[in-house]
Image (cartoon, rainbow, N blue to C red; front, side, top):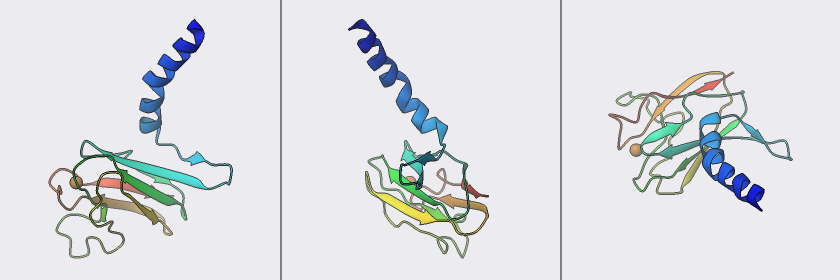
Length: 123
Ligand SMILES: [Cu+2]
């Protein structure tokens, strides 16, 4: 009984933090790799995120504020040309598959002063 309580406390205390900070691709039984970036408290986590070519990244907005996932730098003429989520409300998700290697920078249109220079590295 006490052991189960301790286990539950352990899971509550450490598992959420670990799953957010680890940023490692999880492998499902089907073999698909899901790379999740959370948007919470105006921060993309993890960033940088390193993936392999051909993999898909999924972003989820956990804030009440509306955010975007927009490729490039704020003010670039081609900002959003590679990917642009549009307005993401709370719990909305957005996915993009990276078919080229390289370093891909993105930002949030409504909060481009602070939510910028987030990175996906594709190997
Ligand atoms: Cu934002």
